[in-house]
Length: 419
Image (cartoon, rainbow, N blue to C red):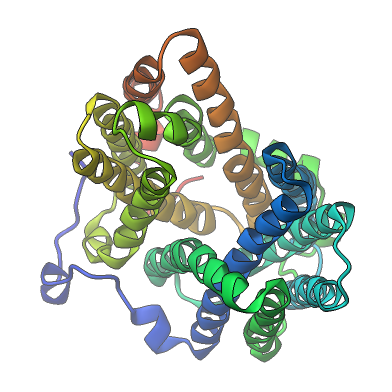
């Protein structure tokens, strides 16, 4: 069981997300709202680019390359973006990243209005957008501990998880409707305008230069060496990789939609949306987490719950039962993410937060892709049942074995954080 501190009266009744960070910090409130708008805009553009590439080429492979052109720069520049965030004024870096992303969306809109439809141009924009995101995201994440007291960070990460999931759910759906009724140029224009909310929020923030005198010598290798000597922080990444690599069923959704549920593309869409819906609920119904002190235990339990939910999905042959299992997995994933992010920002010194966020981006971006490869390979060699249910159970086993050796991680106390 996860150790729980004695709750205050207000915490006993708390079920839904804690809105204290939004009430107490105008800077965080603006940053949160700006991120909400820009995430929806980015979701619209991501879908619009995929649709446009398919319209030009008629090739599913060409659409798949969109993800590759996004992944490679995100992984490569994610680490360097984190190092830069520990070296320069994070507000300035955030402004540069958001301004660059807005300019790229404006370039997409201009090209669409001009009738310039070239696949290479779309691939180039996608790659540059990933670079801007790799610069902006570590800076934005590392800002939050400078805006809020430590006791509000868990609540802030729950609110941030809602922003990302909401954008993932609403953005593509809205993008499809807008492209269908008003064309690509309208979707891209709306995305460019949406970035002004993020730019305004960044502009109103106070300056955030490095606090540490040695920040000018910040490097990627120094960040990796720091992580290598901090077992509890390192354990947050290791435990998350168990879920992303061993129990990642997304690549098999199109196949199981037909084989198990007798469905079609709409069924696949429901399977994709179910974990995102569960993740959104994980942020909305997160108030109870304020009573959890043993964050390491909470992460291990959450990752094991993900594995069990995925294994149960692999055994289900009723669509609604399967969707419920995937939603439960999404809820567990968000719970794990909230505690992981809180540990990274509370237990790590300010001069390392950007680089740790950079590593986080690389893990989150690369882990699921590797998981897709593992699931697809195992399914081809055996069956989707073995790949999904076996992967989920293997994730649980890996967590159990890891918990035996990671004693310090199990004992991690949020009131006395030790990296």
